[in-house]
Amino acid sequence: MINKRILIKNLLAYNDENSFFDRKRLLNLHTKEGKAKFLKHICALSNSNPKNNSYIVVGVEDNNEISGTDFYDDSRIQNLVNANLENPPEISYENIPFPNLPKDKVIGLVTIRPNSKKSFFKKTVWNIAAKTSFIRVGSNSNPIEDDFSKPNSHNKEIVQNIELNSRNSIKDTLDAVMDFVTNRHKGLTSKYKVFKELFVICWAGIEKKVNGKTFWTRVDIELVNEQIKLFYSTLDEVKISYNQDSFTITEYVPLGINGTIDFYPLERTEIHFFNNGYYKIETEMLFNPPVCNKKTLFHMYNSAVVLLSKIKKKQTFSDSEKSDLENLPSTLLVCYLNGFDEALEKLIDAKVELKENHKIAYQNFKEVMRIQRKIKY
Image (tube, rainbow, N blue to C red):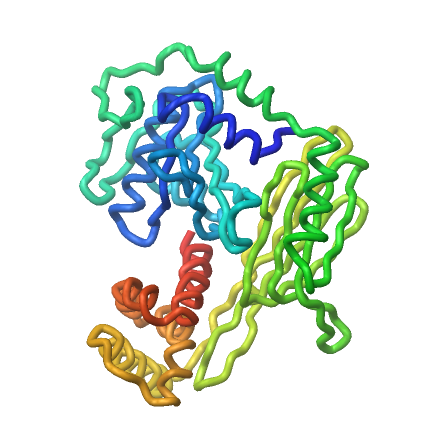
């Protein structure tokens, strides 16, 4: 079993970016340009490594400093790759906590599985034309000719040695459990569960009872054997259940309508554990958006547009507007889900101003974009 934190350290220590490894300070999948660049690197790494895994590490500076990035929900990222690449590789995105980072920051690890077929763009994305393909040359992802065939995998032995040297130990697992429970979540209820005498899941948050059911808020859930953060949110309410073979997370999201916040089921994630030392993660989308009448929607949307204009102009807000500003991202998401297609674009346009001047609204913006990304893909 690979300890993903050790794997990241070994990748960073091995060499600079190369034909099986790339690093990024952050991913921006909100824009067409950001999606195109991400897909280009996936395509290039897949074509360069037909017989071994390749990796992208997110949250690392050019000098290899581990700066961290926001928790990124990966459950639909494969759909993004499938929708845009022909012969897409199988990929995963995992959130890896590091002890020197704030608990809301992680290092993202993208793993691209071996793929013997040539990957290329099936349609135009931003300025990358359909049928274009890429390969890694050193640290660059370069376009390649139509008659290209995949090279022999000269990276196979190197990558296998790096992965072998990243194996987990009992000490690593015990240290991770103790750190999770005693250091990183002081003041919160923390629990753990062992599956198949091998896998350990830890979770922490604020536990509360609603109509006889137990929910968690401010939730952090980790598969500590592999140092993977399975779930993190400061806003959502989560229901957790488990048996001897599986662990289930049901996520509810807050959305504001007419000044009130209601919680809507978003997604169910179930991790199945097997006796042979493997596990499988399955997700099911549960979300049905709230439906409003047109009169209410137009009022919500017009009020939101006024707030966006004041944000852009850096104007002051009344007390009631300050409350509306905090709920602005979820209000615009509700409008978007009810047919106001431009609502989300207007919200994204205000991202910089929200980040610089409105901390709570920006945190809600990130949650809304996470929800929208799941729904879209």
